[in-house]
Length: 422
Picture 1 (cartoon, rainbow, N blue to C red):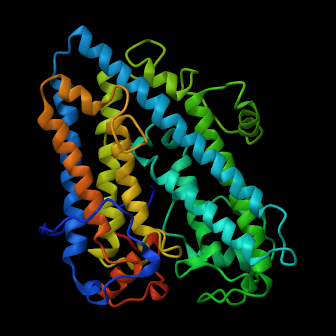
Picture 2 (picture 1 turned 180 degrees about the vertical axis):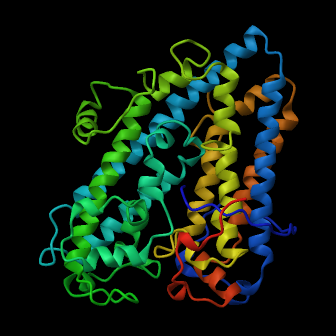
């Protein structure tokens, strides 16, 4: 999630909806569509409307005089969200990063094959999908322990990364800057032009602009170092929300060995902390405070990620011309990332990862309290956002580059060049 924020103003334009399918970024799109600005504008507008809808839904709960039955139902909604969405998402993410590290670990320039590269790329995309579908609930461990910036800061600082490779030491102590860590650092090593890199580059030198003096051996070692950190941090997320169990004991030990925190300031898991909202054991003073964190707080909520997708992830490169800010430019996974961010909101709303309501959930709460219009509005809004993001010509990096006539690899600016938020 953590890019370098810049809020961009854009025009609102109507657009037709497509299906809820990922836009296949590897296949490109209609060449004439790359110069059509309405696609980006429509997606941003849809995200903005979703933000307003979520804020409105939370306002209904915040201002309501809940009776005992309604409050009990909402407590069950929160418990269901923890048990059936948050913990399973983070567990799956930890599984996938563990598999990714195992795939890369031990490889060198003599043993690596194209099959290894392809497998690593496949696992990367699986983990990336799961991570992006967690961004509606970044409030908690991901924010409190700086997991989000550590594993998902972008844009990748190519200049700093090149300095790291050129230092001659490959010192792990240099891996302190989040702008050369996490998913986007791995993406740069594993992908080019939307495809797995050719294994020949790992056996010789890189071919990317400015990196032709960097050996594949250094890049492979770097990928292994970064992947180890990524695995530790995703283990941290699982343990922090699930708490210590017999089943996750090995992962708890990894987290402890890495000297990572995994309990709240009151000494309980983040899952238990949310379930106990309003009790003295919880950091949430009331159930309504916990629900506000889930739905509409400025940071770490469903509304916050909808806002970031619209005003930063899409608008910074598309509306403001900061092409270097495109997220996932090497794997061509940008549009899928954006859609998965919105799907994370859907999962929160439905209390399910299946794409439909399950158990006790926010959607059914509004139906049961005779506010079906709120439920149907949110469903319409997140489906509209997914569809309109999917209408953007793919790959997103080519779309933005075409709009601004600036190839991504030629945009050497960094996050420091973004204007400060007002």
